[in-house]
Length: 209
View 1: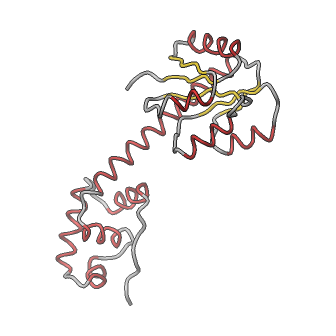
View 2: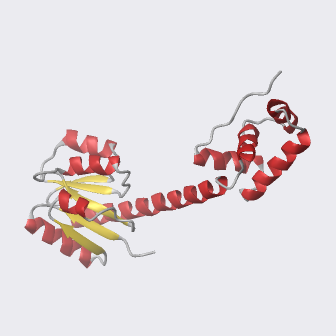
């Protein structure tokens, strides 16, 4: 995996240079930009990283950029910087998932600490997305009937009950169930339930009395 990149977005040239030097001196890759629009023009960055974002900028503010990135499902962690102690703005930014909200002039250790926290969060998010992608690829190998049987299995239904629900033999249910476990590379119903929860797959039905 490539080294993380810290994107610094601030319309103040002096502040931008200072932040860039600070982060670069800590041994990290830096991309310095003067506006939210410049960042959007880069296109979606697929590598690891985080954003250090000024709150008050012309044309598009930091919070407005955060909103745009949320709409685009752009999950890179954000650290906000502000020269004003705006409690309401800070609370809203944190509610939307910002890692930190720091006041200018920012303390070196506070900023580097927030950046390290953000990069760790980004790595965790990327690992979760990769795991979910792998799970989805496995689930996509299931036939419609296997998928149907799976949803009954995670509902806690026995083979006999599933057979009754689907109007097929118990032996056929066992075959489908075995193929599900094999294709998903798992050995227990508990594992299957956890996998389906991660994939957002809900259990089906309740057994007939």
